[in-house]
Length: 149
Image (tube, rainbow, N blue to C red; front, side, top):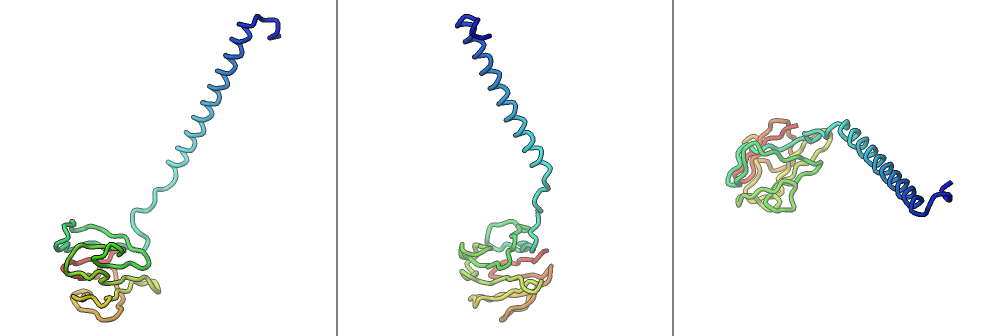
């Protein structure tokens, strides 16, 4: 049937067919992307809170941080001045690796890592690993942090 048409007409029909296929392809791409976006919008947002808890800065000392700054905790969280720590804080009274928080037996434990200025829990200096409860105050250097779950 196409062979009966002049060459220019055959070329015009082929161009139209290619253009139609291109529009069809682009329409399918848009439909697939729109479906993916709708599915992504329906997924629940990740929880704002860490499953294990947070340390909340009660007294920031000389760090320049705002009171209420939250630090998410992992199963083992180190505190200190060094950038290698999970919670790194800029206070000259902190040791590089000052204290360690660890999640064991469904409970948080706090341990001083032989720091120069010590670690206090609720105003009492600790010298061994001690269990923590939500709301407990941890004093390291010139800072005060509160455990929240």
